[in-house]
Image (cartoon, rainbow, N blue to C red; front, side, top):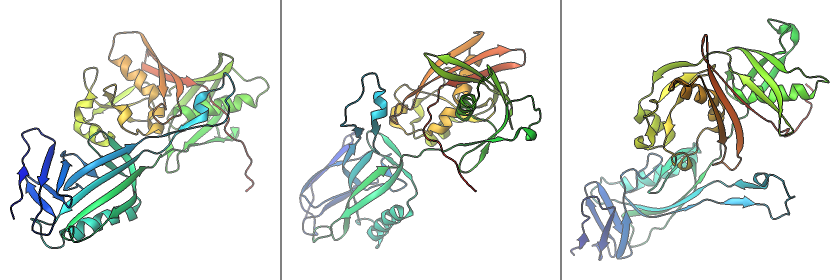
Length: 377
């Protein structure tokens, strides 16, 4: 029997399939690469070219239900306490009802799609989900639900639940014995490690190391000097609002490397190319001891992605230096609020100034003792 179809006008994001198909209730059609199917007689099917579950693109998306929750303590909170210490962001979740039709495809197409979803789930390798409202990086498939009956024998209708994996980075700072230092007059020889690599230089580990060492000294100096692979790191100690603070100077002046194509950077960050701004400077590789690709983005762009927060922390001094290089000002100071999207906000103070050997940058902040212990080997 004939299946009446409401064809979308140019630019429309919805198509409708009405009536029953020859398979006893399955209405299906293909239009310009869009495949839609329904066992319900009337379906409002969403379509947008960039919708995807990893690299799997649904033939039709019926609906997308996203959920973002904040876990808030039910216990009383002391007046004046940091409220952010009593609430934390739960992993984002997205439930997608989507489908594929075997019409117009080779035999075995539906089985291949279903197998691809199961393989993606079993791999447990984080991927990106793109919906009509936002991009979800670092996702895993928590569940795949599908039902086959007399109306969907030649189609695959699934409910796919994806959940965000909150990825954090642990850094280990190793203070070598004074005998291993190039100059015994320096405070310490410091090595910084992530779970995978040794870093030539990083911001937060130096701040934390300086404050921990200062807490162990009867009379800590005003300045500590750390020997690191990238060079000598100067860390000043001070008090701000009654709390100890460490401010470091990066070991080398600002160095600008090659520009990064906007499309490439946007793809890596899960952004649209138009969300990467180039009015102040193009995306560029910059370094004050550890190289990063640095780009300016639209004000609302960060809320829609899950950035590598460890990388952002190490790049803060670079950001101040890069902004100064784009202006005629003698110095530039920034108060940076970070970690807001992940529910653990903090404040850092970055600065940069023109010197005889180029632009020198630094960053400072406080630190909180999380735990302490002794390992016996």
